Image (tube, rainbow, N blue to C red; front, side, top):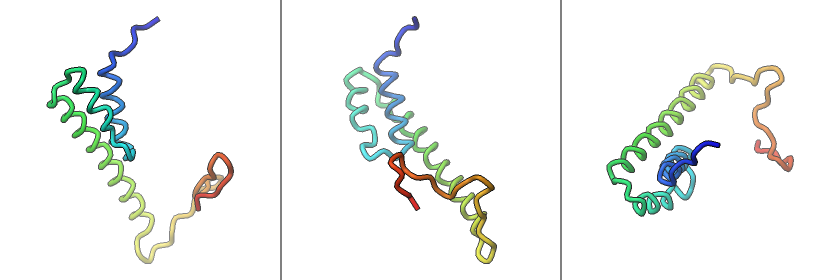
Amino acid sequence: MSTPLHPSIVALVSLAANIASNHPKQGLCQVERLRGYGVADEHIDAVIEIARHIRDEAAQALDARFDEAYRPGAPTAAPAAGETCCTPTVSGRSCC
């Protein structure tokens, strides 16, 4: 059996995931926990900066992909065979 991660590591990972995924709670709960564990603000700042960079980079890549497919006057790229434009929710509701 492996040793469990220290709670401060879990909180750092959770903070980064919340920020990178644009979670509405933004990881503020984890910030308070990290401060309670004695994690330096410089370390928290570094995690926030990295997570925001990953989030922003992903958004830019998605935007570039969309723009490439949508060039004015160019035909809109259709989904590949067997691929759908959007998938339904677990209960079957359409997102389109």
